[in-house]
Amino acid sequence: MTFLIIFLCILLTAVVLVQLGKVTELATSIRGEADAQEDLNTRQGLLGMIFLVLFLVISLVTALYYKNWMLGYGPHASASIHGDSIDGMFNITLAFTYIVFVLTHIALFWYAWKYRGRRGRKALFMPHDTKLELVWTAIPAIVMCFLVVNGLMAWNEVMGDDGDEDIEIEATAQQFSWTIRYPGQDGKIGEKDYKSITGLNSLGQVWTDTKNLDDIIADKIVLPIGKKVRVRITAKDVLHNFDLPHFRVKMDAVPGLPTFFYFTPKITTKEYRKNLSKYPEYQAQDPNNPEMKLWETFNFALNCAELCGSGHYAMKKIVEIVSEEEYNKWLAKQKPTYFTSGVRFSDEDPYKNELFDIEDSERAAAFKTTFESTMLADDKTILLDKVEFAFGKNELTPLSRYQINHLASELKRNPNVSIELAGHTDNVGSDETNQRYSEARANVVYNMLRQKGIDENRLRAVGYGEAQPIAENDSDAGRQKNRRTEARIIAQ
Image (cartoon, rainbow, N blue to C red; front, side):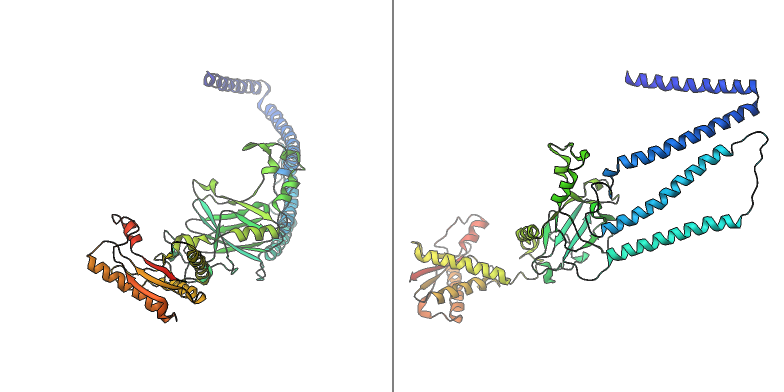
């Protein structure tokens, strides 16, 4: 029914227009074509003048009315220090272009009225006017020169690489997300190489560059107020654009061509929200959260300002500006889990056969706690869970030496303690073979402790073969648990 009504309205409009055309033709034939054309020119000229006035007034009024929703005006003054220069540059450009905009429209419609076609009037042909050409060439050239110089000064101020940035972060774009990387405790972001990209290493970080090991992958951008930030900007697939409109930051993210941008936040998110609360248009309810107002739910955001694909709209990242104290607390809570949880001890880890100092210290502290609690417990057995042997061999894996060092340290700290080193195997193989393996492996640990300076009278090595399992031998996980080495306290 609705479609039928719409169709009938369109049809009626077309009929009316056709009839008006016929009336006009009839009036022309009655009054004469010349008179009709002159009347038409006059009407069109008057309509043009009316349109001119309405158009300029509406353009100005709507710009003033909506300025609080437009960046750079009302509540959306720049949130960065350099943004003031960019806003000033745009305001100057707007002033010049608006003057030209108004004057050209006035001239366009005024001349259409003043020089409308009338009987007895002929057009004057002016083939050349040197003075006029100089004027309309020189004035735009001078204005453009001024605007370009002003823009270059603003750009040099923004992009001046004086090396005094307080913080450096990296933003890597891909369809359709951003990966934000912060430096760890060393304050430096590690190098990347696209050839190193794998399933475990999506950024292509070069793990031999130790600066990468403590880098942090954050789920949002958090920055302190008043600190200069350098943003590394890269892309993995297609052209993207790093856009922080409230900070006047906008730079392409180009595959294979890293770019960067400097900016210094000058207002926190909380302060920006407080400013928004002073404007009535931000007192409205947030449609996504009706219990809160627009100013309460406002967040700075990182956008992609390049049409990079169908999911382009989803490339958003919250940006939070906080005090320096809040920033330090947030950063302290971030963990460099990207390397430690995904790559550490995998085949891609160039350090898989050694522990970092912090890892060794953490394991030593945990082993000390276990050793001391075992001395007080009824069960005097300590599982050496980090002491492992190559499958089918009596050779320790490289990381096993660390726990043996920890055991030697505790024995030195407790000189009255004597231990039995017990070797165990699973049930794969013959009893004789398993017994031989367990004895040999217990002796390997025994000999290493002797090399560390532990008296032989405090040590005893015994192999139990497959006789004392702690799990079922019908699964790989169970057999792995049974292949173990233990330290039993036999005197203290």
